[in-house]
Image (cartoon, rainbow, N blue to C red):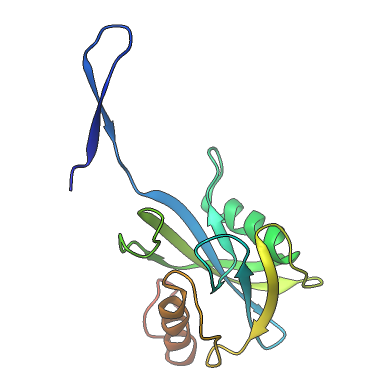
Length: 156
């Protein structure tokens, strides 16, 4: 798979190599009222997902995680900590993304917003059938870490 696309410069006519790079995203496992928060996506790809999205230019990944959580769930986050990174080129059907996954506690009144058609709290072992992206796998890794402290990047 080529990592760049040649584009002709309109001024000089030379080819310029436009590199294709993965796009940074964030996802947040929000612990809330004894479960984890999932959002039903308004936009493709369909399904239930962890709150998250694209990192804006000039934004840190933890700032993006807080912003996306607030926009999609109306919750503020406490105890935000990085869990792991997922980079399978096929994890998002739209493009190659690399997501930094965080764990946090949600505070406030849960309410759908932004790209969320619905928002709901689920037990980590009772997920909806239709999950988006690789979020079922991420939640399985979270469960393994949470109950046995195996996997993830969090130590201690």
